[in-house]
Image (cartoon, rainbow, N blue to C red; front, side, top):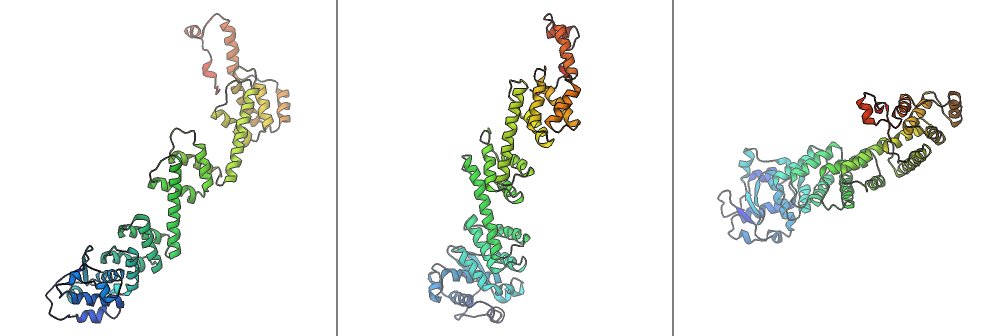
Length: 406
């Protein structure tokens, strides 16, 4: 390691003095490599050529081990890393640091941990303050050492080599809240996070958007796949329903999946069964309109009403089509169609045979006041008055009585 600069904190003698406090309080529990680096650096403080000294080569160690040793001693509070490129180390007076309460003797227990953290960090120098936060992962949160190393490594992979330890600390708190304190649990968390990002990004890609998913979009994808348990195939099926939409958004996709979740469509079998039912209701509505003599196509609300009577009120297709036939020729066929279905439902008519018998007993019931008004208007009109003229005379055209949903 070339270019290491040591800054003197005090004047030294021509020998290498080692404070007794260091020997008694720190050396016994410190890793051997850390002791070697500390003593060698202490010796170099009196040398004018310290900046050219290759300390790693002199000690037969790797640069990572040397950096880890300095991080270890900084976390203990007896040196300070002033700069990284080149590495600048200030040695502190151990006795003075101890008297000021700056020394953390607890850090001496984590020599191997520090070495592994520094190895994962590569050329990045981990500061003593950062290490103290990581010690909390072990002492306060209860992470296994392997889990803490995995957390550190995966954060670097995800966010980059300069990821702040403050961000890592936030991740550690989240994982601790989930009791994910083992290496396997930490790995599983990051793997799931990657799947979420990949899944959300895949949706954006299908919409020809090259940006990264936002936090809100990731949260929605997590809700669909984790909280609701929807499979990737179900999400893809919902995407297919959006092909005619003017604007592709996660909010619109969420509205589709919310409906599916509430109706039990959480896997492809359920989705396909629901699609079959929808196709059947569309065809039933088309045939009902044809038999009722309606030339228009049934709209969404009209299809919904037919589905309600068929699927929820358990009227079979034959009954629906029979009601449509009875409505044919009425002035307002769909209004008449609705009134027949409502009448049957209120009287508990549950089969085509019962519907025919009910119709034969009761005859062809009028469509209500709207039909009576319609016949009266036909007579009044007689080809002599327009609607506007009738209104001027104070005669209603009967529009307020109609509830036509054609």
